[in-house]
Image 1: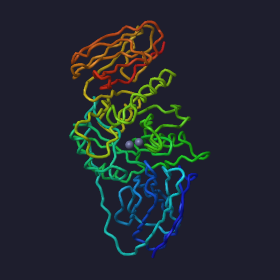
Image 2 (image 1 turned 135 degrees about the vertical axis):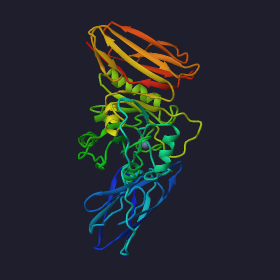
Image 3 (image 1 turned 180 degrees about the vertical axis):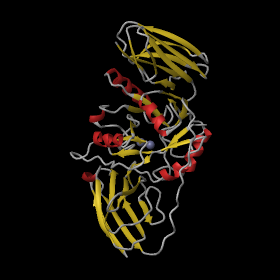
Image 4 (image 1 turned 60 degrees about the vertical axis):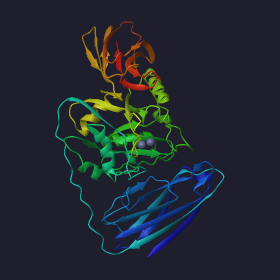
Amino acid sequence: MSLHIEGTLIDQDNHRHIAHHFTLPEGVTRLDIDFEYVPKRVDKYANLLTLSLFDPQVERGTGHRGQPHQHVMVSTGAATPGYQAGALPSGTWNIIINSNLINPGSPVNYHFDITFGFDPQPEPIVWMNGTTQPRGTGWYRGDLHGHTVHSDGSWDVDGLLGFARQNQLDFVTLTDHNTLSALPQMDSRSSDELLTMGGFELTTFYGHALALGIRQLVDWRVRPDERTMTQIKAEIEASGGLFVIAHPMAPGDPICTGCQWEYDDLMPGSARVVEIWNEHWDSSSNNEEALQLWYQWLNQGYTLAATVGTDIHGEPNPNLEFGFNHVFAGSLSEKAILEAVRQGHNYLSSGPQLTFTGTSSSATTAMMGDVLHGKTCQITGCWSACREGDIVRFIVNGQVKDEFSADTSGEHTWQLDDNSATWCLIEVRDQNGSLRAITNPIFFQP
Ligand SMILES: [Zn+2]
Ligand SMILES: [Zn+2]
């Protein structure tokens, strides 16, 4: 039993979620959808159409992959990565084309072939949750951004975990594009050595954000006049998640469709965390511009914490140096790590180790991410594991206040008593000016 649907998309269809409804009959145990479109590319840029599937009640997943021929299979026992296996309720289903990029001036022709199967299917795999013994309060090092074959990555969950182990991380996070289909497998791999965390990368036509600590998919589709990014953010937070603006200054269409952050309501609005370091420092994500944007937001009075994410999609070039988050958390658990990140109790580093604390005349103390009250403040930075040629910079309100050779390790105390400072932090840069480490700020209030 099968169905055939075809259509054409033109310039005006770019950046839309185009619905195709069909009726799934009683007794179906397997659904196969073949989707094809032409042309694959126009001049330099590939057209990018991705699919999302909804049963009569819930979203069954997204395959954020741009191949011009896509096959989606969902059965009672298995599914194409990105989609959820399980019972196939009869009724109205919806397959959506997400038109991430339709090159102008050249219509795209597409068709779907939808086939229903009624044969008995194998039993689904049941993943048992792994556990991580709490290790108490301390510094934990890990990644907050990574992909697998469940979206556009080239490796499976175990590949991502292998990367984390190779880098001796304490925690690693799955953030596939608009899907949680790999999360049960990820959760099953949590161990005393490596905490696995979950969420997804909210991937829209005008920006990406990480929804961390989320176990149920939130409708990620921004729809003009109907559903704003601020509303989606509020839903993520209401379900206990942490919302992180991802790679805000990455190039946008057509180079990286939807990668640049363009939401005026969250510049940064009520957002409290931003990923200023995506992939390796000198990647195409324009991290230096993202860092400067964060400084601007801090200068506007927003209390905003920074993160780093490798955004790893597969086996990396061994010459690349990635930064990781060093988080001061009450425990090695997803909840405690995300709470500490929300508070800015973390620094970002590809090697150097940092501490950054402050005390004030009114005898309050602060660590990175905290607010220090009082007129005169003493700020102390300590660094170690730096390389020859590394430079330490003390930054106040976005300006370099002090700068000297890191000399492998060291310690320095600064006195701030002019009341004009609203925040400060330290950067470690290499001799080429590339960032090697940065703390979250200490904020000042009289
Ligand atoms: Zn992204
Ligand atoms: Zn990503």
